[in-house]
Length: 324
Image (cartoon, rainbow, N blue to C red; front, top):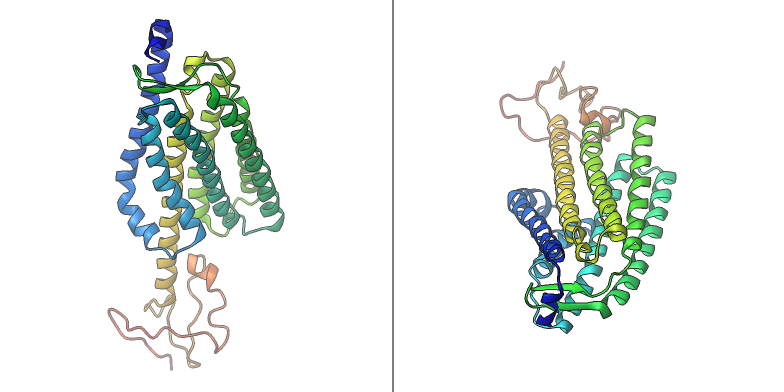
């Protein structure tokens, strides 16, 4: 297969190298971000209770870098190995992007207070687009593999003939545009949600997530239609890296906000400042927490009956005062 090299023009060789460098750049950014956020991952993710979203996050966190290392550096020795790794990599990539979108949806549902119509609408949209995406992925892989060869001189898996990859990106673009519109429509309709701080992070980082994915998918869509064969894989692996990085940042920031809110709620539940929150009443149950705080949103029924529990932990600086 080394006889393929002399048939390449200078432009084709340059395009193939550019695709390799862009893919390598995406992998470097992904690995560097992984190192930067590893401490936060241990604090915010590993210590969280085991759950299905946590498993999905860890799947994206570790399967994506491992797959990209293999695909970017083309650790292959023959056409058969190239076919296997590349086919598996494309499928894993589309699945990981789908799970990333689902993780973002879970956070949006919390932000929307799990309103039935929004949850059902986005869930149906997600299932339709992801099913379509998986069907198109299977079709593309089966169509692409017969034309895939390993070029030892360039050390790259490459296509001998162009394959229509446009359908691979179309379902994702539709999903991201629709969810983005629904998110901001809901934000304008309800400008002051219950979880204001989490909403701010969700709208900021979530918008970045969808904008990045939409822009990169659009670039890939244009390349798959208009670009020459040598630029077919220019953005495929880079978008995979960008998706993983933006998802990690989004989930980490939301987990941090949630942890801070839980700490605030616990502190306000048992605060020892008798003028603000924790004055022992004659009936033995606490008064209301400060209005407008995060805790008051979740503990607004405190002080309305004797069934409400009293915090028995000692105060750090002074003992509780009984109102006579």
